[in-house]
Structure formats: C-alpha cells, structure tokens
Length: 57
Length: 493
Image 1 (cartoon, each protein chain N blue to C red):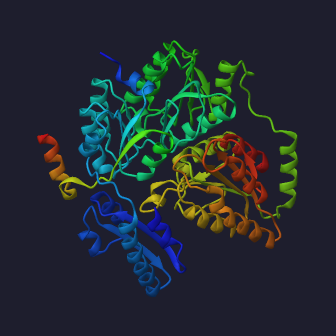
Image 2: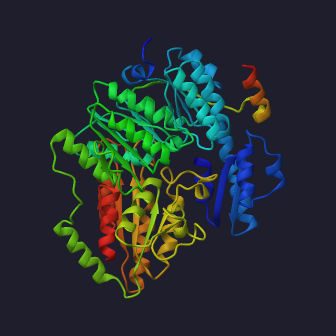
Image 3: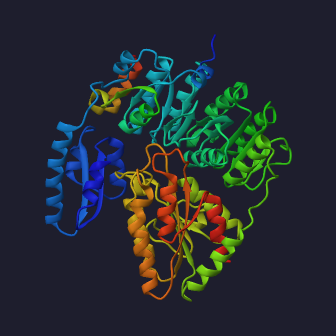
C-alpha cells in the first residue's frame, strides 16, 4: 500500500479550500492547483441536525 | 476583514465587532456581556455587527454606509459557485489536501468528509472540541492520513506555504511545530541563515496535550524520518503534556536522524534523554541546526554586539527618571510567550494576559501594570475582529494607550510578514509609533522602541523596506524575537 503521507510530501499539492478565500489565493500565487469553496452551514446551521445527518452518512 | 476595518476606521467609533451568527459566536458574545434580541434571532448565515461609538448618530451613519458597502461587495466580488466539499471534489477529483477555515463548530464534520475521501486535512479553524480532534486524528491515523490542526496556523509542504507561512527556500531541514508563529520564526531564520526547509508540518496547538497524545506529531516525525530529503528534524512547541513529553522524547531517542527540540517554557530535559539536543529558545534551535547542518559553532548564549551596548547607553540616557517599565504588544502568541520566558530568566517580573504562571496574570487584558507583555491575538481581542497579524488596528490603539503612561520606557513589538499576513504590517503601526514617541518626548523623556521582524527576503511585504521604515521611525530592529527580548532585558538591567 503506498504511504499516503509520503505522497503528500512529494507529489504536487491539489487543494480544496473551504472558507477564507485569501488562503486559496496565496496557494494559487505559489502555483498550486486549488478550488475555492464558498462554504455555507449545512442544515441551516442547526448543529443537532448536522450531527444527525453526519450519523446517517 | 474589510467590513470590520471600514467600521473601526470611521470617526467617532470606539469599538467594533463583526461576526457570523453561529451559536458559538452568540455564546461568546453573551459571555462578554453583549446582549440584544436581534443577536438571539440571528441565524448562522447572518452577520452580527456591534458598534460602540460616541453617539447614536455615529452608529446610524456607519451602519448606513455599511449597508451600501455590503450591497456593493455582494454585486462586485467574484464569488466561487461551489458551496460544499463534494462540489470541490467534483472539480478537483485528484485533490490530496483540504484546507478548512470555517467556524470551528462545523470544521470537524467537514474534515471527516475529507478523510473519508482520503484527503489530508489542514484545519486553520479553532474552537474544535478535543473529542472531535482526537476522533479525527485516530481516523486519520488508521488511514495513514495527516490532520494538521485544528488551530493550525502554518505548514510548508514541499516548499508550498499553507496558511500564514513565509517564502522559505527548500532544503534539508525538517520541522514539526505545535506553535504557528514559532514555526514561522524558525523557518524564516533557517532561510535567513542561507539554509532551507524540506517540510515544516504544523500540528495544531493541542496535538502535544496528553489528551491528543501527539498523533499528528508522531505521524509527522515518522514521515520526516523516512523522507530522504530531510537530514535533521526540529520540533518546536509550547510545553507538551507530561506524558506526551516523555513519549516524544522516547521516540526522538530512537530517531535515525539528528533531532532538536525547543519546548518553550521548559528549562531542561531529563538527563535520561541525552541524545536529543535541547533548545531553550527558537534561536537556540536555529543555532543547533546550523551546528549539525553547516558545521557551525557550538550553541551559546548571545553576547551583545558593541553597537548594541552603545544603543543601550544612549537610550537609557534619554529616559526621564520616572521611566522604568516595558510594554510588549504582540501579534504572535509564541513571541509573547518566549519573551516572557527570556525576561523571567533574566529575573524580571512580567505580567501578561497569557502569563507563564497564573500569579503574573493581568487583572484585565486592557490594563497593563509594571512590565507587561500583551498577546493581542488572544480570543478576548479577536472575537469578531481580524487577527493582529492581518490588521494592526487593535495594536495601534494599544500602543497609543501605553504611551500615555509616563512610567513606560520601552515599547516592544513584533512584526510578522509572509503569505496572508497584513500587506504592510509596519506601515499600519508607523503613525502610532511616531505619535507614542512624540508623546514621551513632550513629557521630557524618550520612548525606546524595540522590534523584531519575522520574515524573509522572498516575502511579499519586502523585508528590507519594512526594516527600514521601523529604523527611520527610531526603532531598534532585530531579526529575531529572542534577540529583541534579550536586548530589552539588558536595557532594563
């Protein structure tokens, strides 16, 4: 089985950025492939509902 | 955060906070004594705006302007069309890392999804529970994945800076850090010494607690030990838990590569761990690294250079008889911590809102006494406001407040450059520094300004320019926090 942490250290980074857009921009500036996700709370932000959804997934 | 700056810069405004209406934020506001029915009704996607101003008219005016500004921002700002992790993964099916900077209460469930999809995770968000952190790290460990964070400020993976990181040359030194600014300071100094970093892996503040047991630290250590590009491994953190410290030292004793540890706040290692080189400060960790990597001189305490002795004599001669205290106003929590350690070692009693020992805690973070070092990145200051590494407004205010006290002789500051930090950290505080110095001289004394800059010549802010701006404002500038703190101790002898 390939060592995934070893792969992280040696293969080009491909990043999903959830949240602050500046983090995606600084990665792009360094030549990293990145997709920006403008995240919003699931289930309207209801933590009990999120936990329930998590437990079902 | 553009919104907060727009508000706090308006005339007549005393204090502002801008934060999302999540349950956690509402609880934090209630803890601070801020109550309003509108806050109770706010939903997680609502923006709560708090403004304390000289008059009701000022509040109405800035909020009116804010509505206009927000309308403009929502129509003009380029916004990603992707809303979920799954959207992102569909766009980049080969993704190997997720960077998470959403409110802490939602971060764990998003990180779980990434781990399930076999992605490594960098969690910048704080306020993730220890239970969630432990569960995420155990899951990652089973899948041979790395969870950097929660509360992880920085990492350098194969030369790429994630979060708050500096432009550092690639090389053969591997670093692991539970302290964000500590890792930045170490990697910058390695670069500035002409050496380079293979990888610098941030673990998040709590990883070295006994509760988490160093799951990320130990995984990172295994990876760097196996990495052919890494020759030396350096570990930097505030004090680990007691059991964790023993576990880490035992692991480092077995390390096939030279290992250096800097546990800020710890005096010495137990005699049983002779193999691990112990550094009391980040500067000592850098010296040990140079000793191993570049056949440098043995590690020793820094001596003052002749010009530094001259500066001390000149500065002291200009103080009025009343001036005797130091005030440190820090953006970097680790710098506040390390400075306290150095000053206590020099026999000084130093108060702080983030003290090394409870007996040196300030009664209120806003009220300095005697020698005081303030961590302005503390939650008390950053709730609803940008971190001082991004925006200097809060530090500016505090510098001016400290300058009003006739007993203050030294203003001690840190400046942090790099990706995602303020575009002009010195420029933001320059007016306040000059005004503070003028206030002291009008009283017949002089305010000594001592500063350190954490940065490299590759950083976007221009290290030379930032240094020169400080020097032209009369500040004494050091390339490391430890050296600046040692200099302050000598000034106060």
